[in-house]
Length: 248
Length: 254
Ligand SMILES: Nc1ncnc2c1ncn2[C@@H]1O[C@H](COP(=O)(O)OP(=O)(O)OP(=O)(O)O)[C@@H](O)[C@H]1O
Ligand SMILES: [Mg+2]
Image (cartoon, rainbow over the protein chains, first blue to last red):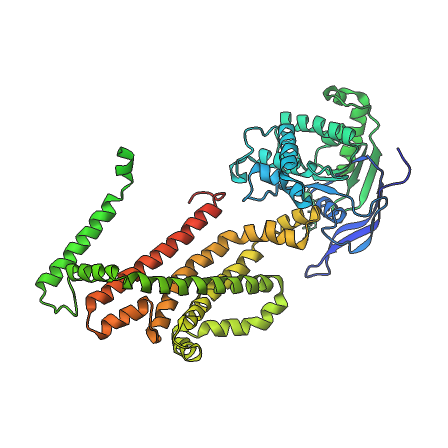
């Protein structure tokens, strides 16, 4: 792993204004992300995970502290939100194409790329459906396809697989690992699932109850590619226990 | 064939026929003079005459033109101002006293003033229509733009959309349902606006035709003008409703 990070977060705090002195969501968070690293954030509800991703995507300014992208000040970002967040007036295909449209790609290449992603997330036959006609899991897969289509440098994923069934979820894990390896992306993902983080991540960071501080930062030194049966190995068990204890 | 028969609104047609029959019976047997209640047959005669010599078409076109021009101007102005108001609370605070005051003035009351200022030509009617559609469209634009979900702004900003892209690909389509609702109210109001303007002073238009019939005790002509206005309003409303259905196909059928 190269030694210069692409992202460094220093003493980041976020306070949301409220009626009694402000609500502190994140407290003095510092960490570094290296190129092509896959990082998972675990933490209880309300610990500021979504807030952290919003800061990294420059959707929210930090109250104090810095977020520095080192090699490329404005990396292309692909974001999957906690809710699918589709545009109800666009069909599945048109939702997936949105980032390419904003970049001004020609319609024919747009269509080819979008079809690739429809295949990837298994939504064939639903290309022309409206978002209201999709199940929660299908909508989330559209959102995943939309986050990948413009080949972003940095993927920010906020519990992207929360609403998927177990089989689809594990297929998406495999696909995400593959995309991450082939396309050499950096991924920062929020999840509630210890298994998910251990299947996917190079490093897992655990946040405390609000206000979120980094409680634990562990390397996941399990061999890749990680197959389903890796969860029965002693090392996986040891890591899982460590994370569980940190989360309470 | 069966399909076509099924699609004809039989009950509606029967009800209209029954209404005409009742009208005819009352006109025939009530003993009311013709200049108060002409029979449907008199109205038909007037209609055929007005259609034949082209007066009806001419006056309808004039009124339609006033409405269309007025709506275009009113909608364009209202959406631009509404968008700016939606985006700036300060601007809203500065302008809202004027907007509320302008709403408190019944447009019917200042119509004579506008006609005095702008003359009896179509310009004054266009302006009345524009003013009358302005407010509902303005309010709905503000409400519509403010109702755009914050999460979708996040989405657009995460892929670094420009302000223009946010306007075109997010704000306009997202506020379309509410905006079109405003237009639907506006279109009916603007028919009223045009007629009010024409009643004040005009040499052409359905309002003028109506008044002409009134002055000449030609009541069946008044009826013809009124029916033309009803059809005009229904037609315009139908067009807006049709556009709404086309633009909002993505919505759940109600
Ligand atoms: N825009 C906002 N305005 C005010 N408070 C906010 C805002 N966004 C988040 N918060 C508060 O900040 C805290 C952290 O919220 P956040 O959404 O980041 O939690 P989370 O870790 O993502 O939780 P979950 O796992 O339930 O998604 C919460 O207490 C929340 O109420
Ligand atoms: Mg969250």
